[in-house]
Image 1 (cartoon, rainbow, N blue to C red):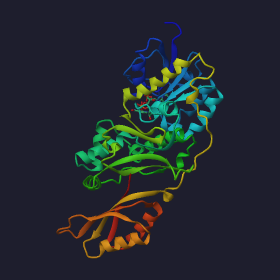
Image 2: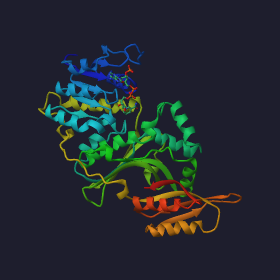
Image 3: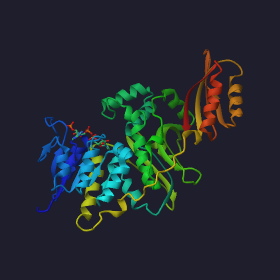
Image 4: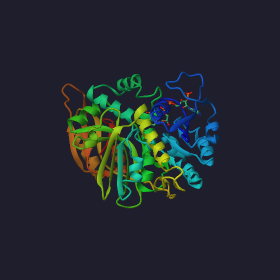
Length: 419
Ligand SMILES: NC(=O)c1ccc[n+]([C@@H]2O[C@H](COP(=O)([O-])OP(=O)(O)OC[C@H]3O[C@@H](n4cnc5c(N)ncnc54)[C@H](OP(=O)(O)O)[C@@H]3O)[C@@H](O)[C@H]2O)c1
């Protein structure tokens, strides 16, 4: 077939191979060239031309769309070169967009090309384009989600199999759900990049990702999961961005939360992702699906390619609704100024007066308790006391913890926010 759409791909790993496989189903699209790091590596797919120089693709005048599925920040300059050469970009790279999106989107606008990134957030779930098009009529109050499959898998296994964090991490690594160095996932960086991207399009503001509060799941114990379960909650790594008291200020963060079992987001298991949007006039909508994996991610990448293809050569400006049209940065409030309900797991010497001391400390910082329970202490010198507070400021709960921690008989073992 003449006049095939020509795609240049940077990266031929899990996602890159998926994209090549899915594109082979389209007669009118050709993978013209692929760039990789190691040319001698055995590949799952065959391609016409393979190079170790990604700039060859960025400069190739026959290439219409550059698909970047290499990951990392080193590809930034390659994409800049491609944009300057008037190529539309499709990328799955959340870290690059969260850190350098502003520069890349400005440059794309200047060069009248688009950057599409459906695969960068929640893998196979269509969320970027729906927010920018089908949900365009809305003013959103919040976006929240389970955006990292690895951590959701680990937390699910900890609960279902009653295993420790370390045992479940090992399981996830064996199954290929977690990398050898799992830091990016388990410490919440991956979810932080994704919520930065989502907050940007939901609130039409640029997001300085360094201002996002981030906490991973490494401090969650099997005990926390069990106790939460008994109290009617599941523990999930939640990434959220919301307006503060209907002002322009945003509260954006990533951390584990106790989620009421009655909330549908608590049902999201294993590597599945979910995104929950709340706004007017739609009210609440939840998107659920595979957050990663070769084919789900390729589904989003190829969807972006087809969206561009449908309009290429027909308009002076391709997909105008997908362009980034804002340049102001959001004001993100400090975690100390956020309000939450908290779960505290406290270990204390099994002696009279301990619960009273905790109650007094809470009273001093005007923290109302919604529940306080002492777990069975027969023949045990230590008691586990669980406290759930009503909504209070982060700075007050921290001051209260600091105060009771001065008592040698009381140790706050964990603090988890409640959704
Ligand atoms: N895996 C998923 O399920 C998933 C889901 C959503 C988004 N993503 C995103 O998609 C991107 C790719 O992920 P992946 O899992 O496919 O990674 P991967 O399996 O590690 O593959 C990366 C590929 O990029 C190539 N590469 C790396 N640096 C390069 C460079 N400077 N120039 C040319 N080629 C380079 C590598 O070459 P060699 O093969 O020669 O080493 C490899 O083929 C990442 O941004 C990731 O965050 C992945």
